[in-house]
Length: 400
Image 1 (cartoon, one colour):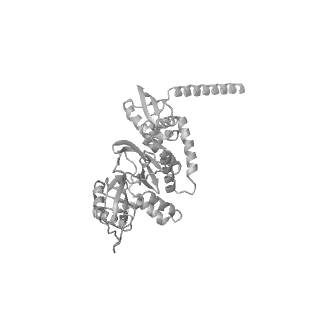
Image 2 (image 1 turned 120 degrees about the vertical axis):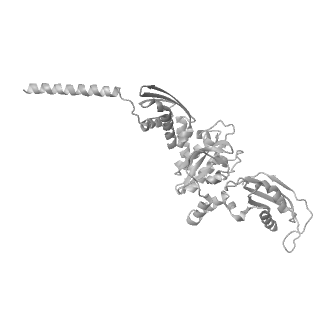
Image 3 (image 1 turned 90 degrees about the horizontal axis):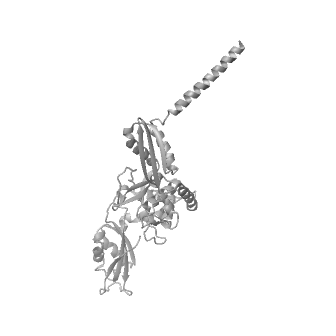
């Protein structure tokens, strides 16, 4: 009896092993990826982040929707990671269907190799360690990063370098895409949520960033803040934290991005009154960004206001005047009109730059230099009585 039971037990074990082996191997041989776009997306996402130049996958699906499915998968991957989107140069694929079994072969091209990506990661960490301290707030971090990029990266006028890797190796030149990628990497690592926008600037294809401070989004175009001449220590802030309407004067985009409606000058003013600890920084930021030109005291809206401002400057014999003027096309004639009958002025020269912080396309900030007679005689109104002089004016270029 024991022998019979033992024999049957052995047969049962052998049968179970045979059953499991046969059906398991059969099931494995006939199993393909299920028709689950999320699972396919996950595998392709890993392949692209690994910088694979080719990748094949098979699944059970509908051959008639291959084009739509692939486009949706790629766009979903891009939507999750702007850095991957703008470092992937291009992709192509071929698809084969046998019944409902679909095989797709992908080929990818990247601006950065995996080795170059690793180099960028290490360099960015080094830079942030040098320029960012634990006690800095987000406003300070953004300015430090903005200024570092402007000082250390040059615009590639040959239009051959497109990546952040190019920005970090000699000769440290890249185009707007490289600026945006480097800013994206540095700002996000510093804890400032950042996105990349693609669109146009003055009719040319262009990319720039969106940054989030205290829950509010702002446009940041570091490329246009970097003078192409790359004058040493010259940093512009014309496109630093603008609203949609402000940057829309010179930029346009089609895709949907977070909206930016809050004027940055209001945010800085609020910080000036609410953050005593960092009030000195916010005061300097207010000055560096030229936010003072949004006030009426530093703005002339027409020729009469301009004349009044310049009359006051001449009265106190100021050698230079910086003002915002809202009609750049008439600036030369309006300056001449303003100074034409003011005694004591022998000559003047001026320069101007566009002012991007308003929604008017002809807004400018101009710097006027005034030369006076050396020995004026003053009347009771403190104005020189000299009438005979040569009044000459000429425009020159400058950067505010």
